[in-house]
Length: 129
Image (cartoon, rainbow, N blue to C red; front, top):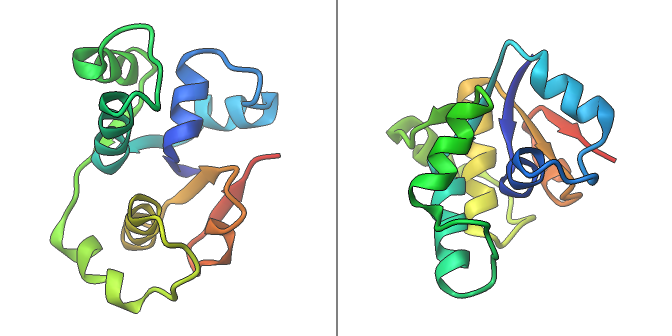
């Protein structure tokens, strides 16, 4: 399985949060590859700067270090993924989530998320409980 972790799943996973079920944790650990998008890093850094995301350490370099420590690869933003944006239905207004959907579609990834709105997109979705 090739996975793209939604921002909240990544943060819960690296901190051992119980909201990541055992089956999701196992799927991440046994996946062919698990990615964290630079879009998620961007989102986390903005929320941290605004005081909406408490972290145990400043996000730079902590988020990168945690991603590497947990064996999660970085997924950069590419032109082909961005080019998919105008074709998406407007189910979700969150620009970060919309871009994650585009990346999942472009790179044939399943999104690990608890966001039910993302499930309405034509991307392959692995929805956690």
